[in-house]
Image 1 (cartoon, helix red, strand yellow):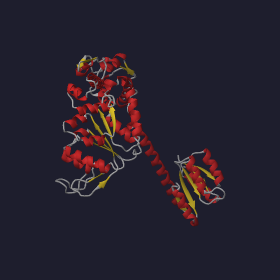
Image 2 (tube, rainbow, N blue to C red):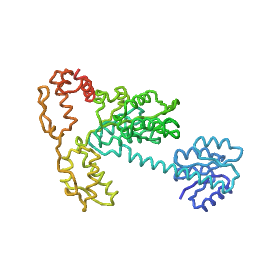
Image 3 (cartoon, rainbow, N blue to C red):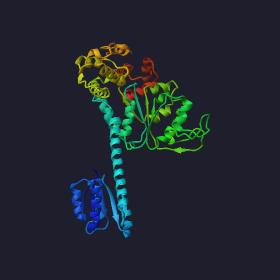
Image 4 (cartoon, rainbow, N blue to C red):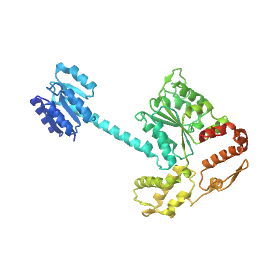
Length: 463
C-alpha cells in the first residue's frame, strides 16, 4: 500500500483529498500547514507528497527541499493557483514530479497520483535489476580469495571508472568474459549498453558488417540499414571476444576506430562518431602472433593499455573450496537438491587435478557431481575425474630443466607460467644478461624476450 502525505492550509481541500485517497485504499497522513508537514517528514517515509505551493511560514518549496534530503525516492506533486504556475515549474526543475493547477477534478488528481506512483515503482524496479546485474556480473560474481584473485579484484575496481581500453588475457575457461562484464557493471557506464561479439564466430566479410553496420544495398542481401555493434554500444562497452582471431583487414579498421573514435558503415560515406569503451579478450600469446605476422603490433599496443591477466586454476588451487561452495549452491538450486557438502577425499582429488579447462571445466565437474549424488554428501563415486592427471604440464613440473648451463629445479605444484618465468630469468642470468644469447638458447626472438621481461617487471634488471 502506497503511503501519501497531503499538505494544504485550506481545510476543505485537505479533507477532500484525504478522504478521497483513503477511499482509494491509500495510506494517508495529512497536515494543515508546512511546519506540521516537516514533522511528518522527519519521522515517516512517504511514497508521494501532495502539497500546496503557497502556505505561510513553510512553503511547498520548503517541503520539496526537505523531502529531497530525507526521502529522495519520494515523488512530490505541487498544487498551485493559476498565478503561481511559474513557481511550480521552478519546483519541477528542483525535483518535483509534476504540478496541478487549482481547481482540479478528483479524476485529474487521481490520474496524476497513479502516474507518479507507477514512475516511482519503475525506478525502484530498475534499481533492483541493476543491483542484481552487479551481483551477477560485478566483481562479486568472480569467485576467489587467493592472492592472485585479490589482485584481480583490486585491478578491476581501479580501472573500471576509466575509459581506457583493456586487454583481458588468460587460458580458455579462466573467466575473461566475467571480468569484462564486471568492469562494465561497476563503472559509470553500467546503465548503458554492454555489447559483445565473438571474433572467431563469423567470417571476415560478415564480421565487418556486424561491427560497423551497413547501408541498404551495400551487398547482396543488405535489404535495409543495419546498425552494427559499435553503434549499438555507443556510451557503453563493447567486448571483442577472441580478438586474436580477427582478420588483418578488420584489425586495420579497428585500429582507426580506436584512434579516431569514428567509423563508416559498409557501403556508406557517412562518418559515425561513438563513445565506446573497448574490452578485448584472448587466450593466445599476441606477441607471438605479432612475430608470426598474424596480428598488428600497433593494434596490440592500442588494446593493451591496461592488461588484466587471469591465472589458470591450477596455479590458484586454494580457491577450489570457495568455488566448490559457490557452484554447489548454484546447482543445488537448479536441480532442486539439498546436498550439504563434499567429502575430504573429493576435495583432495579436485585439488590435485590440473584443470586444463580451468573454472569452466571445474563448474561442469561440480554440476555432474550434484546430478549424480544420491545422498547429502558428494563422494568419490560421484565424480568423473581421476585423482590426478599429470599430462604434459606435470611432467614439466617434476623434471629438472637445463638451460644455458644452469640447473633449474622446479618444485612440484609450480604452474607452467612460473616454470616459464624461472626458465627465462635463469637463462638470462647464466648469459650475464645478454638478451640475444638468451633468446637463441630459449628459441624465441629478442622482441618476445623483451615482452616477457616487461610482463615480469624485469626490464631494468636485465639491460
